[in-house]
Amino acid sequence: MNSNSENITKDIKTLFSLFKKDLKLEFRSLSTILITIVFTALIVVLFNIAFPFGVAQKNEIISIIIWVVFLFSSLIVSSGMIELDTKDNSLELILMYGIKSEIYFLSKVLSVFTILSIVQLTIFSLFYVLFQLSFQNPVIILVAILTNIGISSITVILGILSVRNNLNQNILSILVIPFTLPYLLGAVEVTNQLTESGNINYILNSLYAIVAFDLIFLISGALLIGVYFKLEK
Amino acid sequence: MIKANNLSKSFNGNRIFSGINLNVKKSTILGVVGNNGSGKTTLLKIVAGIINSDTGNINLNANIKRDFLGHENMLYQNFSISENIDFFSDISGFRISSELQDEIEKALGLQNLLGKKISDLSYGQSKKASMLRSLISSPDLLVLDEPFSNLDSESTDSFISILKTLKKENKSVIISSNRKDVVGLVSDDLLNMDDYNE
Image 1: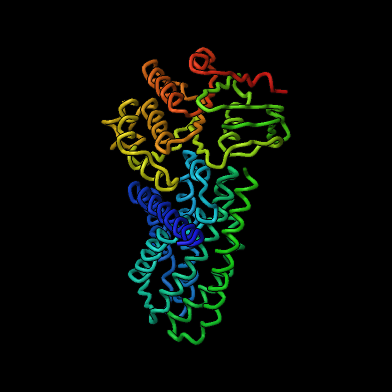
Image 2 (image 1 turned 180 degrees about the vertical axis):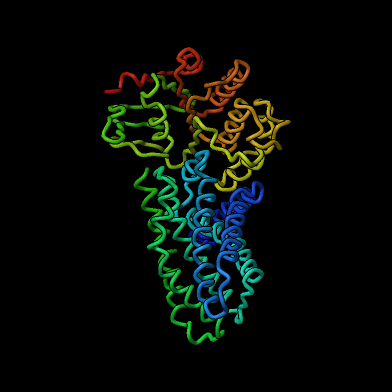
């Protein structure tokens, strides 16, 4: 095995060690996941009580609510996941051992993505039960996964920057909105189409845009966090 | 083992220290003493490679393994001692033999606590757990920031005996403390940070 493939194998092993550690810590305490699910459930129930709207408006409004709830849930999840390493300064050790910042970033995105997927399942189940929302096309699962990747990347980038700079966590929720607008617009549009007609042809452009933004944020996030950790040192 | 010239560091425009030269040879213990705020932790983090200095350079052989033990135990509170050790060994890629690990655990008095969560340990026990974590990678240079703070005399003695063992095994140690009396007992050389403050 040449040194290049050895390095790649080592990086992948490290990525999964970091990911496994995050999940193990999270599922042991359940602190982030429980708060997020309770927050999500509260919002959905409140909307259900507040808006006894008719069928025509329902789908349009629900598509917006789904993704806004999801966005704010992602802030709680990413802060919780990043705090796992910053609370006791374990991050300093991780970086001292020469772990590449790109690998650290990707492991955090993977952890946030996994926890958010569980939150997403809860959100969609609640909407199905409380709003009788029917998803006529399984493509909605693909949309949920793609949007989740992008939002996880953005919130991890901003989360690392704000936690490492001791910025107030509230600032994260302000910073994140302009960056996630492309996702929100695309995801709302696609969800609308899929819940109404289930026709995939209308949503292809929005899907391509979401994939493009996923790639942009994943690549630029890995590079940016690398540069940031170097500057911070 | 490690040579550093003309190290200086500032934070937010305030110069913490300047003009520090270090030469730590194999099998030696360097004590770093000084008042609170004199920059001991900052210097140790520079030597450990956690942060960079503003000026100067550090000459260190690429094969030299460094490890750092900070003020905080830097361990995951919801993991047991064993889980922390396993995780950090996994990502560092280094691990001593299990016989040697048993010996260190015994010397630190941690044999019966390995399955306990860090959050359930006393301050002294968690400090020993982080000492175990830093020794498990068998570093050639161990950088210890205030290891004796808030430790009882029994724990301090066990730390001192471990430092002496490390020295015998050709390892080098840099240790900081504001307790000059204790550091003086184990150090071959002392660096007083108060002489480098502006």
